[in-house]
Amino acid sequence: MNHVEKAVENFSVKKYNCTQAVICAFCEELGLSEVDAFRLSEPFGGGMGKMGGVCGAVTGAYMVIGLVNSAADLQNPAASKMQTYADVRELTQKFEQMNSSVLCRELKFDKPPRRSCPGCVEDAAKLAEEYLKNHGK
Image (cartoon, rainbow, N blue to C red; front, side, top):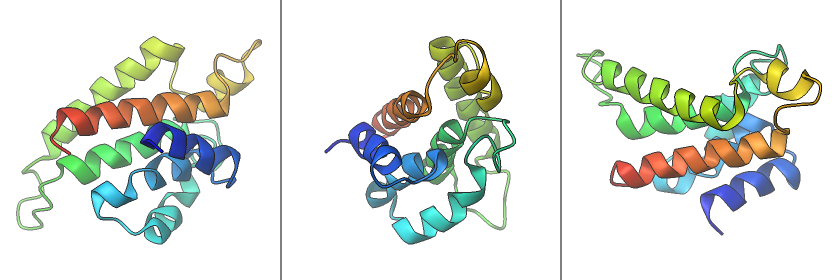
């Protein structure tokens, strides 16, 4: 099963929230415990605590970027920060091109909805998988 299929299964079958569905699909490659990823990402579903902000699936993809790109240099926190921010902006632009928004409230509640939650999970997982491939993982 690939990352996209696993993310969709996490959301649709296992009932993970959208953020959990995406980040947990990548745990094995990223050396992250699925339990820790699940716990850490719990607050971000539904656009940050069901407040309709940035789509939780996109937030899960951002977490993948951070885990891949961060230098994890506690003595020099800026070592990779600007590149990580740039990569997040690029992923955001790609998701917006696909769905015309990254805001949960617009994606879900516009009439008609711009994209379903499972569709957002699929799109975010595709973009995260593309990021991994392009960054040697």
